[in-house]
Amino acid sequence: MNITTMFGPPPAGVNLNDNRVWKDNTIVAVLCALAFITVLMRYFVRLYLQGMKLGADDFFVGASVAVLVVLVSISVFSGHHGLGRHVWSTTLEHMVTIKKGLFAYVLIYLVELLIIKVSILMFYRRVFNMNWMIWTCLIFSCCWCTGSMIAALSAPKPISYFWSEMINPSSGIWRYNFYYYYIGNAASNVILDVLIFITPIPVVWKLQMRTGQKIAICSLFLLGGFVCVASIVRIHYLTFLNGTEDVTWTLSEVAVWSVVEPAIGIICACLPYLQPLIRSTIRKIYSQRSRTGRISSSIPKLNASQRHTTSKRSDRHEAWHGQTQQGHLRSKPLFISDDDCMRLTALSTRVEMEDSNDRESVEGNLDPMSIRVKKDVHWTVG
Image 1 (cartoon, rainbow, N blue to C red):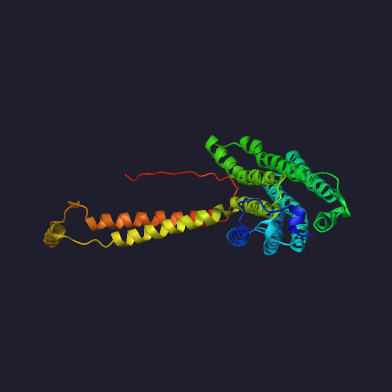
Image 2 (tube, rainbow, N blue to C red):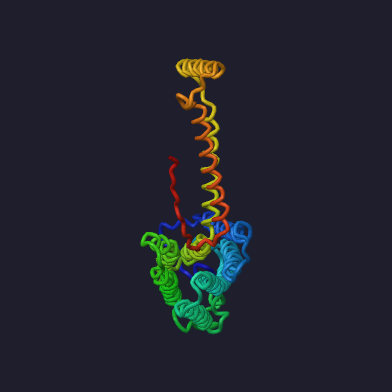
């Protein structure tokens, strides 16, 4: 038995030299690297900028990166054996290897999504305290993962038929069409993600703060909607599996989006923690520019009229000094020196910058989701 016997001849117009393995490998590797860097930045903020210990949500998101590396490794390994090329350019032995990798991928993918969901729910627990809504989402997530695993394992009989079908179609049976598992699992995952991401909104809306602040905080939580978008795109590519013979070509797109989805989930789970780092970086850049502008403006170049004004000021100073020596001391000066104005302005600027730095050092130690009360005090000098 060969590929043509199993899948029939290639359709007209199919170029068997087509290969998108390198493109797929590049995409999944870059996304994995971005997720890894984002988690490192999250740990940096928690441990060094805020001086806090890592919590359960931090450990779960770290574990999710490790599992993501495993998923990427399986994707690259499968690409080496033909995933991302047309099925007629592979061999049955390669197809068996790809199917074994796919079987492991299906189970590990479920574990990865569960870990990310638990990490987000543990974050909710730390910020809002555990309530019945979070408990409900946690139970649903565990049941979804367990049920999906049971459904995947029970589809082929025996389990080895998942991959042995390629070389011995009569060695087992399918209890149901596995295509329906793909669609049902993905659709229920989207529904569960939507439920998780809207969970904190009622709690935030009850807080005593301005409506604009409530909308801003809710928008931060709803950034997880990008995960739902990735899941929907993945479902779109899953629909192409129905009735196709070119499974290696079609599955490559599904494999890519099966990495995109958890990678975006990890990044979105870390975004609330990166606010202090982003805020501190922006303020440092602004502070450096302000200092540079202040230094350049504190050394003005005198033009001809300014030199003339300075000369007249010097003459007035000498005349005033001469009057003082003659015993005709005035009770009040006739004018305020421009140099004095410059010194007062510089002093005011330095005080303002020092106060900004103090605020930066204090805010850097606050929890990213903390609520701060700021009071502005204005005074005038008569």
